[in-house]
Length: 478
Image (cartoon, rainbow, N blue to C red):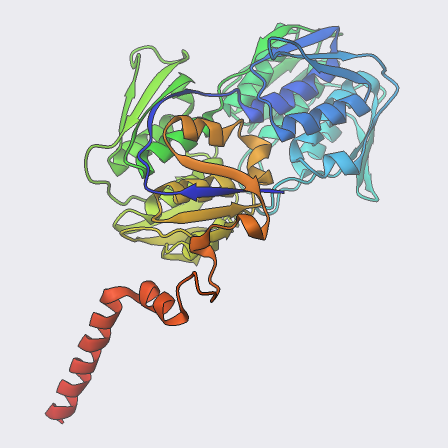
């Protein structure tokens, strides 16, 4: 197992390119299962989650290969398999997207209930509700979803849930409906760019889907889908993460291969904070272009609310919290998508952040500086937030359990290093722990009293003197 050692204080500057979107790549790979022939997907990032999805599809009779150009080639060579095993599906939630393709193409599916990051309750009841409405007979038994349908039929489906729509659920039901008999309408469909990307892929393959990017979809079923070549959209979460990294280090970073219209809410929030964001072609929305992020003046505290698209993504909530932790003033961060997604707050507190949790919100009292510490990643986006905090912190920070990070960011440390960051990937072993974070008492390291003095500092002694003087004054008054 690896860990990161981040030495803070380096100002990021330079230019890097953005990878393809993980949250688009995974359902696209699953949708390829519903197509005839060889699907070719370009710009698929080289991630642990992509590798896991490839293993799931291989177990279902697909041949999955990367060619010399980096494109992913997917082709079904055996249509008899229909079981997506727990040992694979437990690693990643998006594996459940094979459910709709299997039902539509093979008439049966046995898919383990999914795993993934621990960010709160994420049931798949809306997936099952939509597929049941299309005529599938579904039961859950011994941790598996067992579904069967001789032929799916169009239906009117409402996919709204307690915290909004479901992106993976919309992809699942949309793929199944594309091969169903008749017309399907989906109300409260997810509007995320990744859902639109999957819909565009299906339409290129022969599907008839209208309303992509809106909460209302109309899908006219077709007899078959033919494999096509498709370019995955840029990863808007990586874009947001690197923009926030530039802001936290008061740097100047240019990102190539960005769809600014996919991160409008994040850009506007960063501008509210005081960050300068310049678009290469502001008058041409909808095209891939470069975005420059820089900080020239003082940053200010703001309130943030994570919402379904087009709001601030829940996948950027943790990174924004890292940024606001180091900005003077009171900020409130609320997550209305996953209200319990705040496990990173306690780790940021280890670095000196002042955070108080209240229901679905975190109240931050910005500090003048964060300090390096040994912290533990709890999920994918929390990992990124801790790396960003380490970049801005004084001293060295160790981030453990970075296997979470490898699930969703392609070569993140390499991109940060290219921008001037001091990030090192090492084995998670005691011998690799930085000396600054080893609080032991051999002769070559600070004594116990020296450590206490370093931890408290001159301001502590002054506070103690002020308190004693205050007590003495009160005593004389009595």
